Image (tube, rainbow, N blue to C red; front, side, top):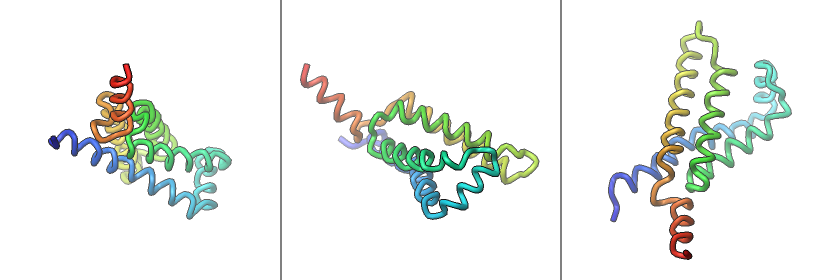
Length: 134
């Protein structure tokens, strides 16, 4: 039976992950510009491929609900680290808003850590198979 929880969980996973999926794909499209921006902030540009794989791969994992708690914890940490590195100029109101956006996103990911992916997820499917196989 469908209820608000079973519908809200996958919709929420998609919505929180789309930002990272689009950002990761955008980094591919603007590879050299992104690499230069990272280096200007003191982050080695050689980390860009890892960043792209992280953003695209982990956002897809959250969307399908695979290893959700672990991946969401990593994404929360990533959100906080990137906030501190790229958005810590609090004298700039836009940067402060971007910092707080990242903090809020980390909070959303921590909800996934606490509550899991919900019924429409690979996590739920595999946990039901394990229980049925016992």
